[in-house]
Length: 538
Image (cartoon, rainbow, N blue to C red; front, side, top):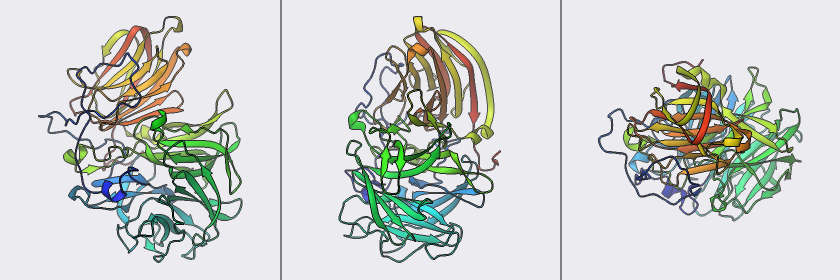
C-alpha cells in the first residue's frame, strides 16, 4: 500500500512528525442534528495538561506494535498450529528514520499475539525497503525452495525503475527471509502505481494467481512457479479513488452456496462513502471477476480500518473452513498517520482494530454480504462482567461501571408509534461530561452513528453514519471500547464503524441517554477486557 496519495511513501514514514489532535468542541453534547459525514479538520489541540501519570494509549486487548511504528497488515498464514502475521514496521520511526521492514508476530486465537521481531529487515538489498505483499506456503515446491517453503511476494521500488514485485523465501518456517535475487518477478510496465500483490493458489487450474494494485485497476496474473507471471485479466473501477491492497477469495454462504469475493482498500470520501475495505460478491473464472452488483459493499463505515486483509480459518488438522474467514485492519488512515499521542505516552504509533470473524449471508432481497463479529476467543479475556439487565429510560442514566477497555452489548427497543428522537451511549465520559464518545441511533434521521468529536481525536472529522429502520423498534449494539479506539457492530454485523480516539485515562464513565421519548435497554452487559503478556489464552 502507498501512504497518502499526494505525499511520497518515504516522506510519510519518517519520524514522529507533528502531533496534533482534534479539538473538543465548546459544547460536546450528543448530536440531535444531522452533522456532516466528513467535516473538515479541527484546530490542533493537545490532550489536557496535568493528566494522570497513568495515562496510556496502549490498547488493553487490541494488537499494537511493541515500539515505534506499524502500518499495513499482511495476510496471516497458518503453519504448525499457529497463524503467522507479518506487518510493516519502522524501528527508528521516533528518531525520524525512513522505510519499513516486515515484522512477525504469531497467534493461536487471533487475540493473544507473540512477537518474533523482524523477519525481513528494511533496506536489505539494493532494491530498497519492502512494502506490502503477501505470503504463501509452497507445499508442492513449485518455486524450488523446498516443500513447505514460505514465499513472500513483496513490492519494492528501487531507483528509477518504479514499483515492482520481488520474491523472498523462507526455509525456517517463516521466521527469516532471503531475497531470490534482485530482479523482479513482475516488472513495472511503466505505471506509477504497481504494488500490493495478493497471491492465492488457484486449485481449479493448478496454478498461482496474483491480484496486483495498479491505480484504478487491479491487474490479474497467473504463474506455475511464483517466478514467472503472465497477465490474464483485470478489474477496473474509477469511482473509489486509488485502489490498493486487493483481496480475492472464495467463501461458502450460510445457505450452502459458494461465492467469490473481491476486496480492495479504496477512498470514496469524495462520494460521502468510506475509505476502508470495499468488496464485491461475484463469480471468477481464473481471468475475469464478474461482480453481482456494480457498487461495492463496505466492511467498515468508520474512519480507521484501512489496508485490511482477510484470511481463512483452519481446523486443527490444517484444513480450511470455507464458511469462516477472519479480517484484520490497520487502526489508522493516511490523512493523519502521525497524530497519535501514544508516541509521547507509550513510545509507539501503530494499532490494529480487533480481528473479526466473517461469515457470508443472504439478505431478504437476495444480496449476499459479509457479516462481521469480534473474533470468538475474545470471550476468554474477560476480567470482570457486569450484568445490568433491562433498563427502561427517559432522559439519561449514569452507570456505576468505570472502565477504559470493555465490550458493551444490548438490544435497545422502542415503540415505533412513539419513537424517541435519539438513543445511545456516552462512552469514555469525562468526570464533568464535556468529553465523551457518542454511539447511538438518531431515529428521527434514520441512522446509527459513532461521533468522536466530543473527545480528542486525530482531526479528520468526527461522525460516521449508517442507515437503520426506526419502524422495526429495535437495534442491537455491540461496542468495543479500548484506550485508543471504539468499534460499533450493529445488529448482525453487516454495518461496523471503527474509529481511533484518544480520551484521557480519567474519562472512564458510561451514560445512557434517550432524547424525546422512552426506550428500553435490554440485557445490558459490560465485559471488561484485558490481554496481558503473562496471561495465556483460554
